[in-house]
Image (cartoon, rainbow, N blue to C red):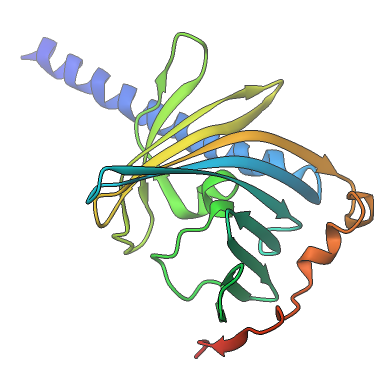
Length: 215
């Protein structure tokens, strides 16, 4: 009996240590991005549509200038966030939707998946891979039911932990995968390549209507 209890205690302690390691990895990812005020991040989004068996792969770009100031471009989709507001539109579309940035817990943004994981997800048991990377299951914090089977792959870039890939299944059974391609830090918006900083200022595209959905 004592032997069985000792084994059970060891397993519980091992799981707690692994979960604690997962928390540290997520925190380290976020802290790594905090070392510079501005980042550009390129990524690949793969979407597998369960109903048709079709897979769509698009490359995207994230411009991050603080935790809640960012611009995302994925295919024709555009997202811009600042001052607590989120603008969403499609190139060639007819409308721009204006929403509160934190209005819907089921709206998952690329910025949250690649940078701000600690605030939105709770880690499970970390699994170290042969190449030194770590696979980490996640579950959403709060009441969101949009995502399931969430798995993160992270490794170290020098001393920093970096998200390399994150995969999940959405509420309709479709599979998503985000892969980090490249990231680059900048000391200020002025240090960005010419014209990029202007993307953080919203200008209504010609011919589109602005629909304000904020409460």
